[in-house]
Image 1 (cartoon, rainbow, N blue to C red):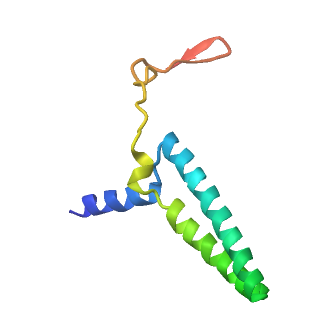
Image 2: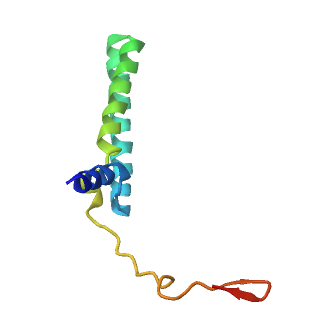
Length: 102
């Protein structure tokens, strides 16, 4: 029971996403930051208040952070299949000054 809980927590903190998910996260973050930047500028210009502009920009950045940073499952829909390791199949031989060490 504890092992299963620990495994879930570990998977949540490891942040495993695939390459397509990284590309998608980068696109989403760029679009959201640009959108909130323009929105903050427009709201600040209409209100003539730099304080509101900064808070809208900060809120947009925080929203983008919570959308992009956690390893949501849609970011891991194309996992990579890795080839098996050949190094583990044979014994490691180290050679030092012409002498083989096992």
